[in-house]
Image 1 (cartoon, rainbow, N blue to C red):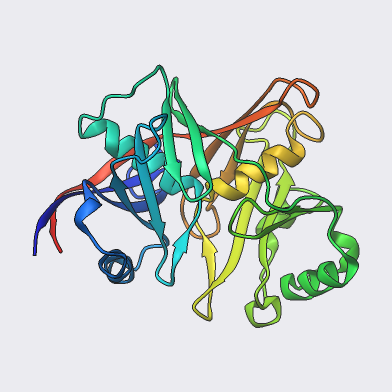
Image 2 (image 1 turned 45 degrees about the horizontal axis):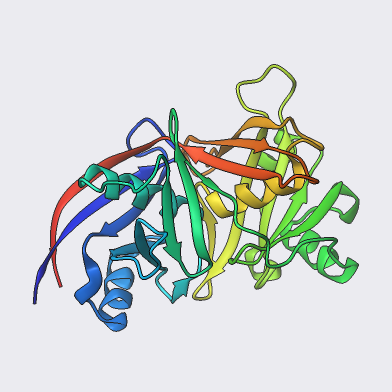
Amino acid sequence: MSSYEFRQVDVFTSEPLLGNPVAVVHGADGLSDEQMAAFARWTNLSETTFLLAPTDPAADYRLRIFTVSGELPFAGHPTLGSAHAWLEAGGTPKGAGLVQECGVGLVELRRDDRIAFAAPDLIRGGEVDEETLGSIAAGLQIARDDILGAQWCDNGPGWVGVMLADAESVLAVTPDHAALGNHKVGLVGRYPEGSECAVEVRAFYPADGVAFEDPVTGSLNAALGQWLAGEQLPETYVASQGTVVRRRGRVHVVSTGSTTDGRVVWVGGDTLTTIRGTVDL
């Protein structure tokens, strides 16, 4: 048994207990896959991450991301929270930003007012077939015509992005999780012009057979930004998420460049450490 430096970081909030927490274990190179998986099950958080030495010389660190049921190639709030933890523990970047090595490859991060990651390429995008949309509408307990737009937003977890008429409609959804089945659905709806946030976002997915609403979701907001920023939404906007589950997540989305010269969507949020210490594994 060895002791490892540990942090629990609240992501997408500047106030404790209102964002989405991630557990971060530092210097985890000596841990086996089973030890990582066992600790992730024990924390019972949506994600637990492990910081390791990079294998790619271009990266500042390597990150492995575990849920209670398995490993993810990429996830948004664990990326931001782990970058925060690495920097807070004295990590020194090789360049002006950060480069994270993870399952999807190298992920670029930048540090301005807050840490932000460059949205990874979608594994699957484009239109959603009618059978899937009908099934999702039934699971959300809304009419098919209430869905004003939909896109595959899969950058690893397998999200389907669904646009409703407005933020009020998003907040009113009461899903039938059994009917939603294995669909991983991200809802988005606009707030009136001049509001603090441009949109309200909600994320539903099954985890080990248990229905779950994610408080604040970086990967989903990244893919929604790739779909909507600069098109149906401004190139720079703030998304609210977590309202229904009594959180106050704020996700900052910025689209730079253009589709012809390499558009990049940056997803950022405030981060703060709520727990620090050591863990014996």
